Amino acid sequence: MLRSAVKKKRIEFTTDIGRIRDGQTTFVTVGTPSNEDGSINLSFVKKATEDIGASIRNSEGYHLVVVKSTVVPGTTSRVVRPILESSSGRPCGDQLGLCSNPEFLAEGAAIKGTLRPDKIVIGAEDDESRNTLAKLYKRIYKGKKVATITTNPTTAETIKYASNSFLATRVSTINTIADICQRVPSADIETVSKAVGLDPRIGPLYLKAGPGYGGSCFHKDLQALIAFGQSIGYDPILLSAVEEVNQRQANEVVRMSQNLLGSLNDRRIAVLGLAFKKDTDDIREAASIRVIDQLLKNGASVSAYDPMATENARKVLPEQVSFATELGGCVKGTDCCIVMTEWDEFRKLSPRDLRTMNAQNIVDARRILDRSKFQGFNYVAVGLGSAKP
Ligand code: UGA
View 1 (tube, protein in one colour):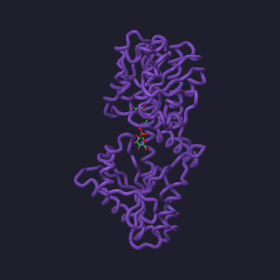
View 2 (tube, rainbow, N blue to C red):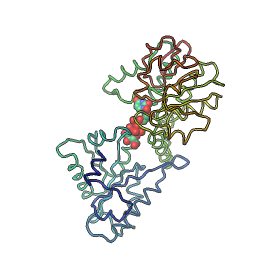
View 3 (cartoon, rainbow, N blue to C red):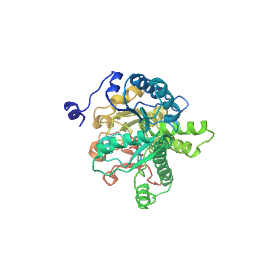
View 4 (spheres, helix red, strand yellow):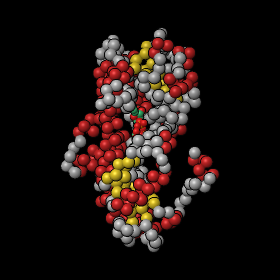
């Protein structure tokens, strides 16, 4: 889609900030990384705002600035607005509009998320800003009905953090129940999730137990919200617990392999999957990194394979990790393999693919293998109760 849009000249890329003057609306989509204490780093947002303001300073006509970057509640009104007003030399109002318009796309599903969003959130400083942005979206979605929430910028910003907090909480909740199932012979989280998800008050999504959430958003946003809460005199302990459960989930995966092998010392482990989820090469905050770290600390050696993320992982993992270019090379001579990412390639695994392993031990951290196929194997999985938990 991008290639075709470039070809048709419907999109172009420039490093000339002055081109902002050619348009009526500017979206701020820069990153909002974490400071060392977890709080949000707004330096890119501030710089972008300053540049936008400076570049429209001597231009005529109405300009709308839309903050799409994820920013803590109050940022658009209390940080962006004053910078924009002073750098542009105009007050928000007739000539200058300002909105918060958070983004809810998930990686690997951006096109679907763009074409069929479940909602659009417009947090506007004033009516003119709101109407201008609403009109823009109306044009994009033409006849389609897309739920649109219009509110003030601070509430819009809060909606974004609330969404990610809820989603991360669901994952940590199901992982908590999975860890309990793990310790009860014959309990199975898969069936628990399926049944629980049928309750319309709960719903079926984000109930997949696994090695813990990764990616550039959940951890970063929860940390930012925790730090923000604390800065205004409220400690959101629920979110801290969600994060702690998530960190611990990696220990669970390591513990399962330890239980299979007795000790990890001098054992060779195959890690299948490095990306934080399938269909991406992104390894930011991936559970695989936490698991590999601990395997190495426990004296194991690690060979890893991922269909897309190897190059990125190579940059952050220690040199001892060996990277295979295909699955067969990764599992060869290993004592245990751990499935860390739900790639379709791993879903189809059969005993034949694992025949060169040194010992037949599998940890299915994503619950994607058909365990009935692996009869001769020691198979353990997240949330699957076993006699030896
Ligand atoms: C997440 C949100 O889903 C998006 O709505 C949001 O816009 C985005 O963050 C953001 O703030 O930019 P993303 O990080 O791309 O999107 O990934 P998700 O698909 O939500 O998955 C996050 C992690 O949770 C993955 O590691 C995934 O494996 C894990 N997960 C997800 C589970 O372990 N179980 C589940 O049931 C669902």
